[in-house]
Length: 401
Image 1: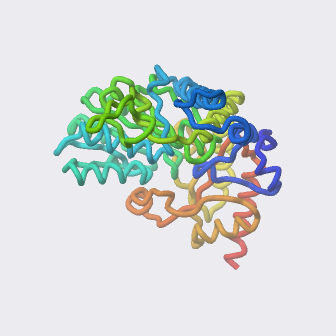
Image 2: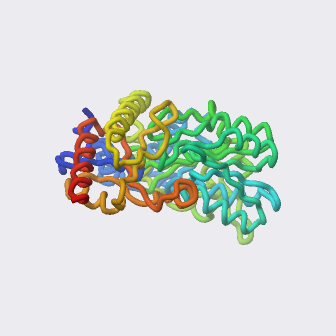
Image 3: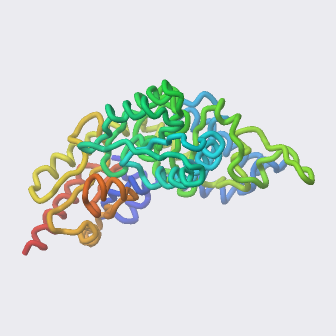
């Protein structure tokens, strides 16, 4: 139904794209918005007093307001533009983390985290003698009882947790975890890379202190990310990078920084990417995030049913439920995921194969080296899944010969 809005499918009519967890495709409206900026009002923002600079500044700042509304932040002042989810999490580790997490304090993450939500905390723990601890994954979901006991016992300064697993599709109860963390005096950072593009995320309802996500996974361009921080926290944070655009005044030996969020956006930002992200949000709002979520949930149910009929295929993750999003990882008996992905590509079917930046989950928990992963967005349909399953069956038949 929505495929016609995406030029890549017009230019590649036989393409089955099942890798939206890595990056999503872009509708024509997003491409047009970026093209319009470069062709008609390309200029730097905030400091220009000429017409096209003011137009670019207006478009850039309107995106900030639009994002605040999209995730129900109290104010656009709580929205910082970054390059991606990875940079957003690093920003918190290098600023709030360095200033507030002291030696012997605890940081709690989970075994299903993407490397982007592990490595910054590993580095911080090494630099400041912080104890890094893990919530266990049991039966493809977090051990919530153990997590609650761990939080109550250790009172971590920060709980950094993914909202949706990029390998298992598990939707974590982040609202409950936030409540437990706050009762024990801690903060919560939510990795929303796999949730914000696919479901309603309300930062006030979740009581998130920090939320990070990427534009390129939500039908927008690459190179633009978002970090939400509660304003009362943001006011006390020092900048991550310094330079132009984030100052009020500079003297020989002192600098007065700009107010938030601008003091966290040093240098010329990704103006075109921000404008493209604005168009992506417009597109998603036109469809409705609830409709997107329902569509992907129906596709997930359909795909799980089709795959469950293949005896050689092991499906990782929860059975279909309210706690499962549109990400499915599988292991096929005696066939390496890379071989499956390469052979599927010969049929113009794009999937992801590997460890998905989940070494701990793969090696320590699931005991696999790699999986084949499919993931959905609004442009996918049941025909895509049918072609994938039929091609997978053909591959298994050929190799077993």
